[in-house]
Image (cartoon, rainbow, N blue to C red; front, top):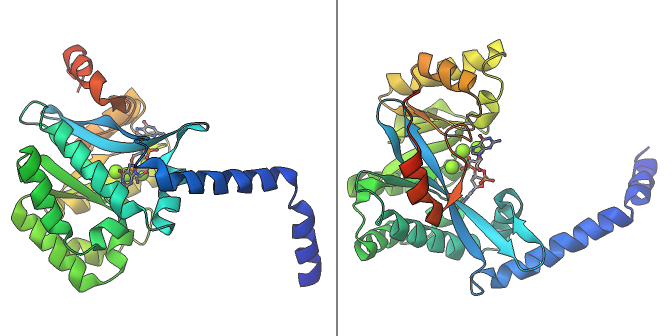
Length: 277
Ligand code: C2E
Ligand code: MG
Ligand code: MG
Ligand code: MG
């Protein structure tokens, strides 16, 4: 049977898969020069607090490939991580996002995603201090988003890094909560300010009783531990209403504002009012 499978797979490895693979290899090779060639840019998506309105933006990395167009992060970030490029790319994102945020109204935060490679890099917290100093952004206006995967390795060092960040005064968010190896242990031991509920659970939260139970559970858990909750991927009024009723603290998603260029932020702020919340 194994032989047949092998042959079957070889047969289905057709021309279009070959092309896909070649494209991946092409992308992978061009990723090496993308930073020098200034092909990266950042889009910012509004973070809306139920009580206070817009409180800042999440920085989302984009890559404009000269031939392929804008490549989504879900495609190129794993490649960059595998090829050891994410440390340098992440450092660029951090500096760029903090520099941008320093020009925003002074109560706005910027939330930056960290890949495991960055977080585990020696001298990471020193680099944060230097960047904040250089661009003149107070530490409490920077929120760092990490996922559970970051916490899987080298737990003692992770804990040290997180506590150093806490002392520095940066905020820490646990991103994509519920999608990976959610261990409640992390929540007991790590100083998160915010838990972000993955959009997977928000998607059908109006209609799926199971999603409702999970979302209610995460909100209750976070509040019980003194943490705030952000719902990601909010696309409809119905979802927003449901989340507000359940005392979710922050909403993020296309309903409140899609990711936008740094230049578009000024107009967005002038035009938006979130009185419906
Ligand atoms: P994430 O941090 O969970 O970011 C939220 C994702 O949801 C973003 O996808 C955003 O564009 C998308 N989104 C926002 N609102 C909606 C909505 O209403 N509906 C739907 N369907 N999606 C929505 P994006 O920009 O493609 O980024 C994907 C992931 O790539 C991010 O997920 C994050 O894990 C990673 N990423 C992005 N930028 C960076 C970065 O600078 N560094 C690192 N290490 N990872 C990054
Ligand atoms: Mg994020
Ligand atoms: Mg997320
Ligand atoms: Mg997500």
